[in-house]
Length: 375
Image 1: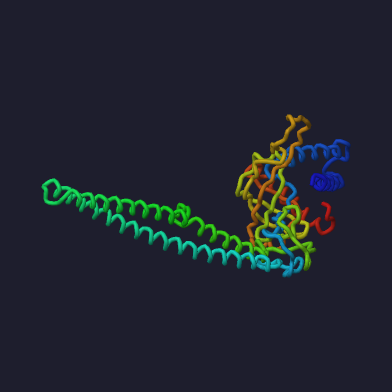
Image 2: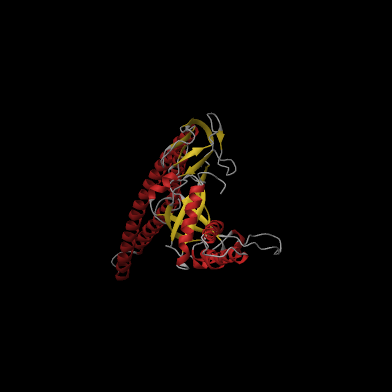
């Protein structure tokens, strides 16, 4: 841009010299150097503060598809690079081993339910027997107490009281036996969870739910809107749950993030909500408009990693910081593929007079994209 404005200045000087408005002297032509210095010091340096620029790129998430269960692939339901919606089937694992596991878990649950029903009936019977034994013991105690009073008054003989004592001892023994039967029945039922559910029944239900969940996981589905790329999965292949062996690569298109990198010396002028203009390589001659959504206040250089080594010193490089941009027109995202690159121009609240130069420069860059993809 400095060269362009300098050429205009030289052309104006040439016209003025030809018309003899200015003398054709070395001083006249040396003023070009002064002109360039003025442009650099009073226009282009302030423009970097008031309207900083930086490279911009379109990012998206790439998900490694790793199944939650291991198995053999019996169906691949997608084609490479075809649009998918969240929940679409990607591939199907052989469900038969997991169906067998579900059937076994269902049978185990039925057996446990029957056993629990039997144990509960036994406990109810034991409690009923205990109630009867306690009632008989209470009656025997009452009869013993009544006869003891009659013996003292001489109404009945001592032999009658001794018989009552024998009956009472027998009734108390029956109560002890009934209580032991109740304890045994409670032990057969087993522990109870905090929610009041019998533990072995809850365990059987959980095993069935786990088996059913494993069966459901044999159908591997799209985690979001997007597409599968570099598809190499085929029928008969065995996939595992190991994180180092993904079955597919899924490109998430549900959200695209536009990020520009701005040098640290210009960050103090940036604020969320400031206007941004973007020129992308894939859209030459067109300017997209947006605003600053977020300024990431950390770079990779500020990350402290855990290691067994002492702190190492070295040359520190001033890395740019990432700035997230949101486009004003949501439809523009449809024309930006992940990986698209370009240039950004951010218009801050400082040096507003220099914004027009940046606007011209970003539009020149956009039009040059027709000719030179490297610029």
